Image (cartoon, rainbow, N blue to C red; front, side):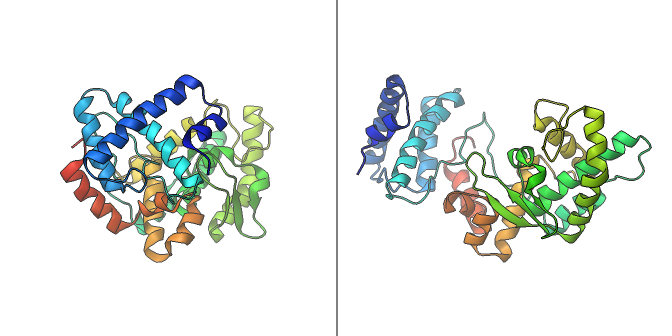
Length: 296
């Protein structure tokens, strides 16, 4: 069995970073011991208490708290590699100021689909703006039907489309695995128009001829996605951001598919990342936050 120290060395970390990780991990272990928690198998709810403890120590320093959590997250990654635990309970945890990040106001399937069908693409006089609107509607479809995020969308290339099969391939990126997802029939129709007519228009206008599915005239795809979300908010005021849409899609998937299927569909490496979207888990999380969360 590889030691945690060797694991850190193999990751190519600087000695100063390794020393800091050990220092913070020792503090975490002491806290666990004082409260009779196993530092290796600790559950998310118990970690919420630990975050509260850190908040009490660093009241106005969320950056310090996040740094501490990041160090411990590395420890959980090591435990996963050694098959000591199956998930990383800190995978998606980040303290932001005095606000709590919750999957609140989940959009229903009807509300998600309405975002797609409400997207206006025809009554636009300017040819280029109409082309942009059609591109943005396709992006909306990939968000509400396939739960794609900013990274997924920006990494898409024309070769990832399998329109004759009605599918799209999503390459692995960051913490997400690759997967192949079914497209809705109406998505296939609009993608065919996009590939044959709309995309060439946009490429010519932007003077961008790479193999990206969505040509860019900006350094960051997020600029396009922000414009899409801004438009979607005019159709439904409940929409907050792209993450909110993805969370809603995954939550709805879990209502009609088993968790392993949903894990594969949304590309999660660890089942624990998918479990956080379960409605019963969200209710438990809300109760936990009410009692223990450092930002409440």
